[in-house]
Amino acid sequence: MGARLGIGLIGAGRMGSTHARILARAVPEARLVAIADLDHAAAGRLAEELEVEAAFGSPEELVAAPGVDAVLVAVSSRHHLDVVRIAAAAGRHILCEKPLALTIEETDAAIAAAEAAGVRLQVGFMRRFDPDYLRAKERLAGGALGRPTLFMSRQFDTDPIPDTFRDPLVSGGIMVDMGIHEFDLARWLMDDEVVEVHAFGEAVIDEELGHLGDVDNAVVNLRFAGGAVGSVELSRNASYGEDVRTEVLGPSGSVFVGLLPLGGGAFAGPAGFSIDTLPTSEPRFGRALAEQARAFARAILEGRPVEVGGSESRSALAIALAARRSLETGEPVRVVTLAG
Image 1: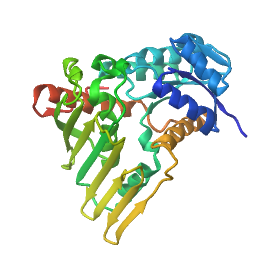
Image 2: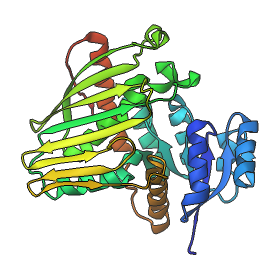
Image 3: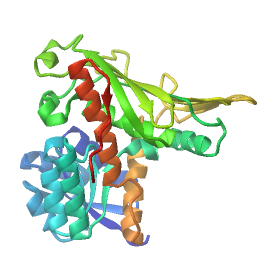
Image 4: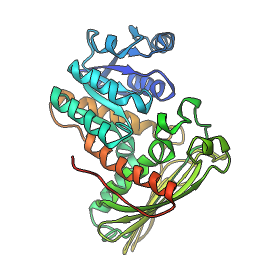
């Protein structure tokens, strides 16, 4: 085996634990060499499970440890900027969970920190590495549908929202925490920018979210610069299981991603209808997370740019923030990206 990238994981919570297991078992280009969490005991337990030698109680200790070439940031979203700055100052390349930060200003600061330090910064939009979404992108880019006219995407979660993420000041709320994946997909699949949104939502099941200023079910209408339109549906209350689906319609057919009950995708065109399938034993997006980490490691090892940089998070966040504003006002809101 050739060179392997030494990665330190910062954040041993639910998402961090998922990343750790994937890094340890499914990313041959990398080695998980250290884990850090403010809950040192949690970092230690995860390190013991995965036979990782080093566990720390702070990001500062981890980035200074021998063998750490890069870090994967999986702490709460409101702390992303702090950790990115710590890693960049230590000269460590960074793969950061989405969103890069909760405001445009903090996102710009994170991007600037990485650029000033000369390190690469990749954002965790893992669906860009999912086989079904990649097939959809290839079909769209190849012109199989003609010019896309309608984008539709949904993300329904089944697990209760963690207590630590209930406050929008911590997670960014449903538009940033969940919706940012769909808004990134909209830009990427349609190869166009979202210029206006109109959002509707309510705290239908979890009234406490309403008291915190968030909702648990929402619909966001999109208008693209090129004239296409779209919609995004978000819910935290899918009792039947996780449901992630996307469709893009063009004059010559549609691409579909996410056919119940699991993953998969499909393509409908003049020649008929075809279905892509995934192994039922594979967790939804498990492979995408692994391929994302592999792409990050290869970019660092080969000395080339990462595939999904900080500017992609900035653009998707601008849509999410506009959607949140529309939710608050009940009015359509123009997407303002501000000067970079």
